[in-house]
Image (cartoon, rainbow, N blue to C red; front, side, top):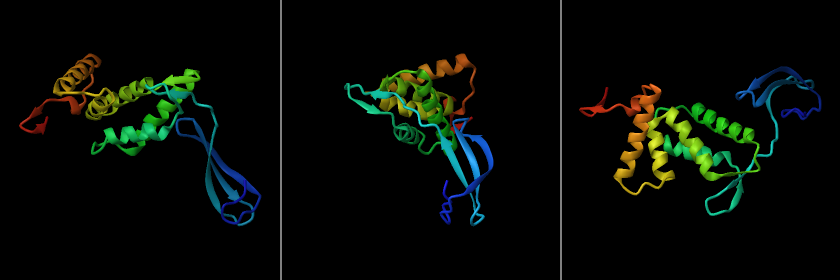
Length: 170
């Protein structure tokens, strides 16, 4: 690999380790010409399944669409960007392990909802309202009731599903 600082053809790997949940190799390199050090990331180039949209059109899988949907649902919620990156990475990894050539967009939407249900339940309801095209307040209430029931069944204690008391969370 050529040095990005002086374009010298010889560099050596100083350190190498797994990154991004084992899907990348992070390498520290040193230029033999100028002595500068820099980091590179190596990722396997894999063929991901095509996404079949509800209208029958097919398109390549785009991590950015998943990320944008998550960011929109998590807007103004106390969730770090690293957590969003982890969800995108998990969904991408899950997609690769499916071993299929095509996957319905509805399946991806369900995976996003599963991740949001664990990550932030307010964001889950936001995403569900758009994804499932809620038409009225009753649809919201039904989804919230299902979410509360599932949360209780799992024994989770997520503050975003607790009832409000005088405008304040308990």
